[in-house]
Length: 192
Image 1 (cartoon, rainbow, N blue to C red):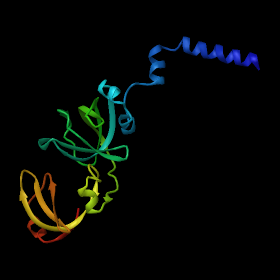
Image 2 (cartoon, one colour):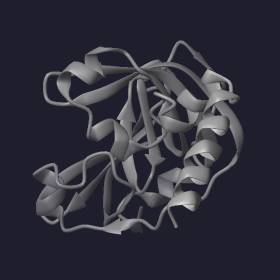
Image 3 (tube, rainbow, N blue to C red):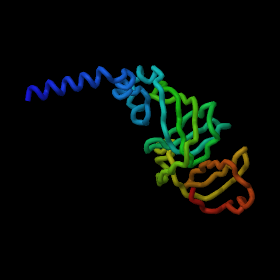
């Protein structure tokens, strides 16, 4: 029994002694943040250190002109300030996001350097959220489904229309739209 323990210790020593240090360090901890939970669990000091981040997710909404990027990452919708270097992604694209960790004052976040399209992603099931939950921020950055009556529509570089949800007027935006046929939506009950 004691001999086996000694032999295992010698085998482990040989393995460690003849394995490149870079492989050992990589196996222990790459130091790269690769999922959203890792990012959220960073201390302020660790987030400020600017660790490398490499996340994969599905684009929910991307509007570089209005500085808006929402990506479904590891089971949740997340807002990012779009990076200066990025592919022209559309909703549903699977993207790789790279950057560094940062501290926002309320928690760890990512300062993105690049967004690259790597395929087609899978859009999440839309949340059916009560309006009051949405108004309190309970569904911020999430992929949600709402139903309401269209009241007004206008072109502000993208289609903006307001729908009535109960007594609340809620704006909706559509990129890359064709106005043709949309006038018939006025007064219609829609599911978005």
